[in-house]
Image (tube, rainbow, N blue to C red; front, side, top):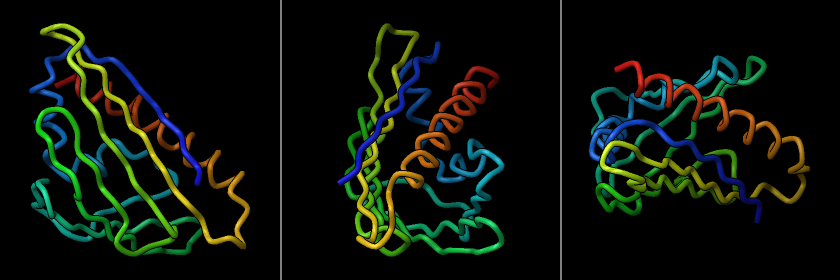
Length: 145
């Protein structure tokens, strides 16, 4: 099982950071331009049991990736897991920790397992890079609100 984590502190209260994450559209807004990530549904509000489908396009090949919110603990954390998609296992934990009343530590932890025939080294590097860019974009978007 592969694992990685990215984290960032933002100058906002935890309630504001949590509220932004209740909107699944945030995924598109913070995604880097490559790979192209688009939600197939609109107007989805995150809560326990919410399912959504993401279309990921990489080098002209599109993959539909269905995820489900399997753990929901406002405003502390939530977990989305792959229902169907490119990984054997995918679990993404979003954590929010109040540092002060006006600052929050955001931690994205990912556990995944690939098909045994796929070398995970490049996939892991690509995912870590993508998540670091997403975290930078998220911080900028939250601060600019």
